[in-house]
Image (tube, rainbow, N blue to C red; front, side, top):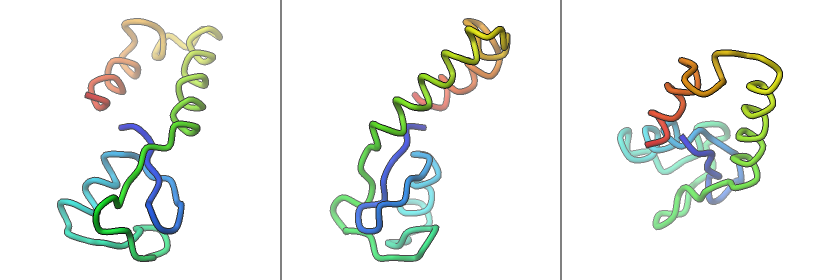
Length: 83
């Protein structure tokens, strides 16, 4: 579920959403603005967005949100989608 940039316009998407749009639905455009994607590398990892998400989830856990702490259902679901 890593964040990915659409190679062409720069919009950021959830990895599984981008994969579904481009690979499964056979679209070579951005789902946000419909700009053309590069055929060979339509999606590239957005490391900055991923780092932000990881830090946000760690803060949520530290602030006592049990759903995001080790063993919490949201964290487990998120980790399963990443695999």
